[in-house]
Length: 207
Length: 166
Image 1 (cartoon, chains in turn red, orange):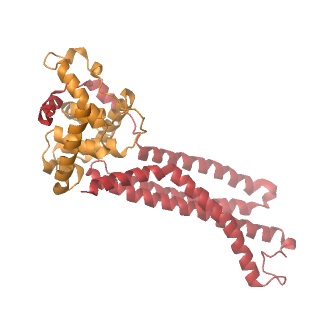
Image 2 (cartoon, helix red, strand yellow; image 1 turned 60 degrees about the vertical axis):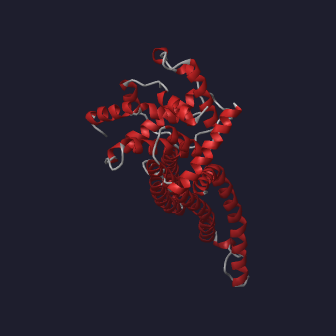
Image 3 (spheres, chains in turn yellow, red; image 1 turned 45 degrees about the vertical axis):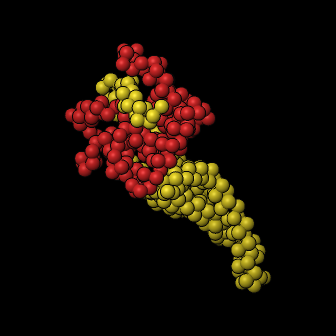
C-alpha cells in the first residue's frame, strides 16, 4: 500500500468531536503538565514551610522563658532565605516552557532551565547543612561556655589549625552525605525527565 | 480571565481544528483515558496561550506547536503496550459508508506502525500525512529543512517497512 494512498485515508478519517459545552468546560480545568505540577508542589512547600517555621519561631521565642530565642532568630533567617529560594525557583519554573515556541527551542529551553533548577536545588539543599552546624555550634558556645574547652573552640588547649581541621572534618562528615542524598533525590525526581528531553533534542539534531 | 466573547471565539476556532488535536492524541496517547487527558491538557495549554496569539503565524501552525509541545515534552507516564486504533470509538452516526471497513483496517495498520516510532518521528509523519510543506514543518518543529528532508525519507521508509510487516 502506497503512502500517498494512506495519506488520503488519514485525511478523510472521521473524528470524535466534542460539543461546544464540553470544550467550554475544559477551559476551566487546570493544567496537569509536569511544570504545572512542579509549581503546585512548590506552593505546597511554601505553605508547609511558613506553617512549620512560623510555629517553631513562635515556640522558641516564648518557651524556656525566652532563653532559646536565638533559635527563633535563626529560623527567621532560614525562613527569609527560603522565601528567596521560592522566588528564584518560581522564576525558573516560569521561564521553563514556551508551549507556543518551536518544538526544538521549547525542548532546549526546558533542558537548560531544568538543569539550572536542579543545580540550584542541590546547592541550596546542601548549603543548609553547614549553616545549621555553624549556628548550633555558636549556640552551644554561648549557652554552655563552661564546656567549650573542646577542640571545636579556640582556647589555649588546642592550636588554631587543630580547631580549623576539626571543623573542616565535621563539615565534611555532615555535608557530603547531605550532598549525595540531595543528588540522589533530585536525580530521582528529575533525572529521567532531563535524560528523556536530551534524547529528544539529540534526535532532532542528528542528520 | 478571558471574556465570554473570547471563549466563544476560541471554541469556534477549536471546533475548526478539533480533528487535528484528536489525531495528535491518537498518536501520542496510550489508551482511551490517556488520550482524553492529553486532549484536555492540549486544550488547557491552547487556552492559556490564546491571549498571546497575535496571528503572526497561521492558527493551525500555532496549534500544532502547542499540541506537539504538550504531547512530546509533557512526558506522561508511558504504559508498556501498543494501543491499537479503536474504530469502535467512532460514533456510529459518523461511521458512514464512505469510510468503509477496508479503510479502517488500513488506518489501523497505519496507526500501529506510527505508534512504533519515536516521539519526533511521529510528529514528522503526522505533518507529512497532513500535507504540510517543509517550510511549515520547520516553523513548527524548528528543524532545518535539509535535516527535515533526510529525516523524512528515513521515516517514510521505516513506515513502509512497518506496514509491510503488519
